[in-house]
Image (cartoon, rainbow, N blue to C red; front, side, top):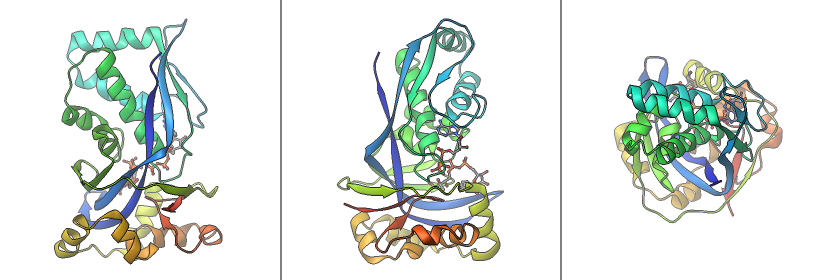
Length: 258
Ligand SMILES: C[C@](O)(CO)[C@H](O)COP(=O)(O)OP(=O)(O)OC[C@H]1O[C@@H](n2ccc(N)nc2=O)[C@H](O)[C@@H]1O
Ligand SMILES: Nc1ncnc2c1ncn2[C@@H]1O[C@H](COP(=O)(O)OP(=O)(O)OP(=O)(O)O)[C@@H](O)[C@H]1O
C-alpha cells in the first residue's frame, strides 16, 4: 500500500492582526519540517465501521482524520459520497504517529490534510486544492497550509489564506517539552492580557523577509505573540526554554535552525 507523508510545521513568526468573532486573525510564516512526519496508508480491514489504526490519545470521533472524513462527506455530491463511504468500509486508515501531540507542530491538522489528499487521489474525486482547503478549514485552522503542501508560506486570516513564500527549506532541530498546552487557552490568555495587533506596515515587512533573516533578528517573544501568554499560563515552560530557540504555534515545541 502506498504510504503518504504528513509533515510537521513550525511557525517562524506568528503575529496577531485582529479578531474575527472568537477567532484571532494572524499573519504567520509556516515552514514544513522535512525530518518529521506521520505516515498514513489505507489498509484492508474486516468490519464495516470507520477505523483509524494508530497510537492516539483521543477517540475516533475526536480524531482530525475522522472530522476530515465527515467534512468531505458533507461536501461531496451523493454518488461520490457513496464511493467515499464504501472506501472507508473496506479500508482503515493506518497512521504511524511520529509528530508529538499538543506540540504546536500541526500534527493533527497535517493528518487531516493528508487524509483528504489520499481520498481525492484514490477515488479520483477531482477536487482542487482550494476545494480541499475549504473542506479542511472546517477541521482546523492549520489544515489549509498542509493541503497546499508548500515548503514555506505566509498564512493569514485564521489560516485560510495561504501564499507560497519562495525560499530555501531550512533544517530544524525541534524539541517538545511534555507540557500539554491547550491552543484555545493560550489564545484566550493572549486576548485578555497581551492583545496588541500589529499594523499593516509591520505585517508587510514580515511577509517579505526570509525565514533565516527573521530568526536572526527577532527574539523568541518578538517572533511569536503566543509565547508570552503560553509562558504565563504554563509556567513550567520556562524550565525547558533554551537560549537561541524559537516557539512554534501555541507550543509546547521549541526549534532552531540546525
Ligand atoms: C496556533 C496555530 O497552530 C498556529 O499555526 C493555529 O493558529 C491554531 O490552529 P489549530 O490548532 O488548528 O486551531 P483550531 O483547532 O482551528 O482552533 C482551536 C481553538 O483555538 C482558537 N483559535 C485558533 C486559531 C485562530 N486563528 N484563532 C483562535 O482563536 C479558537 O479558540 C479555536 O476554537
Ligand atoms: N490525528 C491526530 N493526531 C494527533 N492528535 C490528534 C489527532 N486528532 C485529534 N487529536 C487530538 O488533538 C489534540 C492535539 O492535537 P495535535 O496533535 O494536532 O497537536 P497540537 O500541537 O495541538 O497542534 P497545533 O500545532 O495545530 O496546535 C490531542 O487531544 C489529540 O488527542
